[in-house]
Structures are given as C-alpha cells and as structure tokens.
Amino acid sequence: MELNYSTHAVTMDQRFDYWSDVVCKHFIPASSRVSNRDKFDASFSVRSLGNLTLAEMSSPHHSWERTPQHLRTGPNEDFMLSLMVSGRGVLSQSGRTVVQQAGNIVLYDAARPFSYDLEPQSVLLLRVPRKQLLFRVPEADKLTAINLAAGHSVGTLLASMVREAAVIDLPGHQAAQVPLAASLLDMLAVVLQMQVDGCATALSSREALFRGACDYINEHLDDCEMDVEQIAAAKYVSARTLTRVFAEHGTTPMHWLWQRRLEASHCALIEGRVRQVTQAAFQNGFSDLSHFCRVFKKTYGTTPHTLLRSN
Image (tube, rainbow, N blue to C red; front, side, top):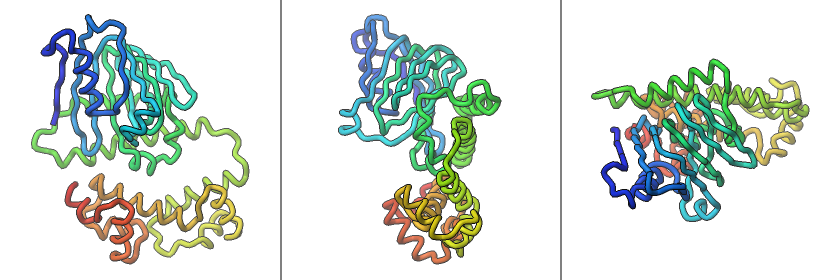
C-alpha cells in the first residue's frame, strides 16, 4: 500500500506542522525547524515493503533533531537509511558529522540522538528494524553518519535497488514483498560489512580471536552438536582461552551461539525464508522443537507459529 501526502491541500500557516506530523508518524519522532514557514511546500510518499518502510521526500531546507527527551518519551530502535537522490544534507550522530551529496547513502540510529539538516529535492528514506539489521551486521550501530561505500560499485548497486524498490509495482503480489525486502537488507549488509572491513584497524590477537570465533559460529549454526571445544579447536586455542575472550565481551561462547540461533530463526520466519517452524528451528541448530518454541516466545513475546502465519 502506498500513501501520498502533500502540503498543497493545507493552508499556508499549517503546512509545516502538518508535514512534520506526517513524517514523524511514519518514521522517527523528532523536533523539526524551518527558516521560512511562509514558503514551505513539500511532498512525502510512503509505502510498505514487507516489514520495511520506504518513503520519498521532497522539501525546502529544514532540519530535524532527536534529543534525549525524545528517546525517553518516544523510544524507537529502528535504523534509517537515507539515499540522497538530488539535493544535500548534513547528518550528525555519535560525534561524527557527514555531508551528504547526491548519490550518497548514510545510516542513522533512532535509538540515539542525532541532527539532520536537509535540503532535498529528492531523498529516499528506508526504515529498517533493528534486530534484522544487527543480526546481519552486529557492528551496524557503529556505522552511522558515514558516507557508505562512497564511490564503490556495491554502493551504486544498493542505491539502484533502493530506487527500484521505491517505484516497483506489485499489484496482487503482496507475498513477493517479503523476500524482496530481505534481498534489500542483504545488500545493505554487504555494504555495511565492507565498511566494517575498510574501517578496521590492526586488531589485537584477542579481538581477532573473538571475531574469528563469531564468524565460525555464524557459518555453522546448523550444527546442533557444536560446543565450546569444537569452536576452540577450529580457532586453534583452548576452550578456557576462548571462554575468557568471550567474557571480555560480557558473554560466553554458548550464550552467544544460542542468541545467534534465535536471531537467525526469527529472521527466517519474519522474512519468509521458511515455510514451516521446524525448518526455522532445525536449520539453525535446534534439535528440540518444544524447547525452541518456549525460548522463542520468552525472547520475542510471540510464538514462532504466530510469526510464521503473519508473514
């Protein structure tokens, strides 16, 4: 379903307030400011794509600020991806400031304060559920206010996918939205992971061990017999050393493993990657379906069967 909003149908003195309410309703509550309310004329179209929300915005120069007060009164954990089609923006978050030109892609996090000064002739905004993005790229929250993959072909490919998703017509094919949204998230994950790899400095041996062990776990989630000894042996260290390294990150190897299994199962269900709950469980290393269902409901507040039916 697509919704279209325009300030043309609103009296001049109410246009900016009306438009601000519309944007906050569909995205992130924040304070908005404009230098000249008398000449404000903007348009905003929004559509659902699976469990993503994609919008195109065109407006005069204005700014947004999400403050700690907003975090307390209107908590929101989604990420926002912004593709500047034409125009300009300046985004500040987590001590970083980036100038966004046409073609640039930036990420910002609703769970933290930010400011965003915009003069977009056209900007595409994609709202991404936090759990789905962090499952793919756990370091995503460290990549806000950065021009992502600037000048790289993968950035161009992601921008092309976002543009196509904004205009693609799927009448009578609602089920196609879920895998399409998953593909878009996968491409975003590729771009973010490249950014992680490009920003990585020389890692300490212990940090390298932690990341290597996490990668091994992610690659073998379907192995229901995986244990600490197996992970340690794969990284050529003792189980004791591995446990100590994970403890430095506030967790244990097995807790991290079970958390990733749950996250993988949740994503498989919500993104329509499986047709049965047993697939989501067994493909991610759960051998006891009853135990899986109990832990899943405790973690996500709903049963895997309910989530499967809703998608």
